[in-house]
Each structure stands twice: as C-alpha cells, then as structure tokens.
Image (tube, rainbow, N blue to C red; front, side, top):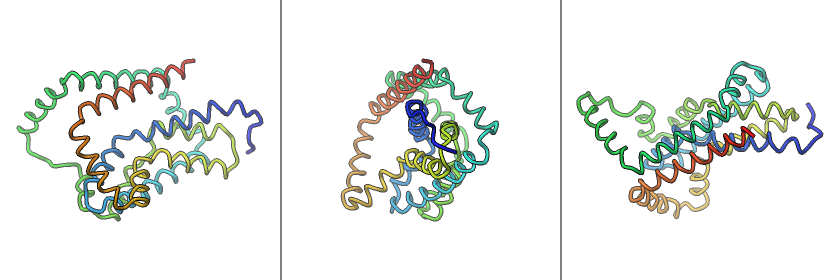
Length: 239
C-alpha cells in the first residue's frame, strides 16, 4: 500500500480520525475507573496496570481489525450508525441532561431512586469496582484488558485508518496514536505522578475538594460542552 498522492484529500479523513479518538476517550467506564483508582492507595501503580491492560486489548484488536477485517460487517455497520444525525441527537441529549442538572430535577430523580433502592436488598457495587478496591496492579491490568473493548468511535476510527491506504508501518503508528489519545484520562495523571510525585497527590486532593464544592456547575458546563461539540460535529458531517 502506498501513500495517496493528493495531500489535500487527507485533511478530512485525518481530522476525522483525531475527532473520533477524542470522542472515544469520553468513555464513562474509563472515567469511572480512573476516578476510583485516584481515590485508592498507590493510584499510580493501579492506573499503570490498568493502562497496560487497556493497551494490550485495544491496540491488538485495533491492528486485527485494520489489517485482517477491513471489510467486515462490524466496521460497515458502525460507519453507518455514526451518522451526523446520531451525533446531533446525542448532542441534543447531552444539552437536555445539562438542563435537567441545572434545573435541579435530577435531585428529585435521585431521591426517588434512593427510595426504590432502600426497598430492595443492597447488592453492592459492580464486581469490577470491588476488584479495583482491593488495590492490586495485577488486578487492574486484568480489568483494563477486559473493559477496554472497541466502541463505536474506535471502530469508526479504524475504518478511517484503513481507507487512508498507508503502508503497514504507518498504519500501525496511526492505531497506536489513536490509542494514546483515546486513553489520555489515564496517561495524564500517570505523567503527573512521574514528573511531580510530591505535587500530584496534593493537587488531586485539591481537585477533589473543588469538585465536591462545584460539582453542580461542573456537570452543567461539562454536559453543555459535550453537547455543543457533538452537534457541531454532526453539522460538519452534514456539509
């Protein structure tokens, strides 16, 4: 496979790959696991184990899909499902959630959920959260490998990488680069622990206090930003 001759045609596919990698990074499971690990002792070791497991699964499956299953029904179905209309709908949903949080209606919903939960026997947190609480890097490696399965944005990004028709070496670098961007929620805290091991724990504690005081505004602004970005992405896709 050779590099396409027309450089201008690469702007849209490459930009789409970058956008999809950022979209894939907005993974609720990854956000939840990172938050939990930051609250546990030795968070850097736990996150490092999780990151290695995530790399193992995600990069391996990504290379298999790009080189062995380029025309599979999975990638075609994903490409069709990630239409601009879906992006706009998801963006509208995020804006609606932002309004619900801003108006305080989520508190009433939360209270009703508490009442229903109080009437049922407590089953405890999910098993993967219980395993994380044990604080073993080996355990987080396994959890990272099991939970980091290709999502819709990742599959769509792999399809874009395949359509570029680069050489094998460049395609491998693109898959690895996609994963580096996709897993930044783990990589940034780990880099902070490595560069500033004394400052980072104090910063995390300050961040926890800030979030506890500003959780409401943080949620409203975060959902609004995600909603606006998705709607813009959908509108761009329609043009």
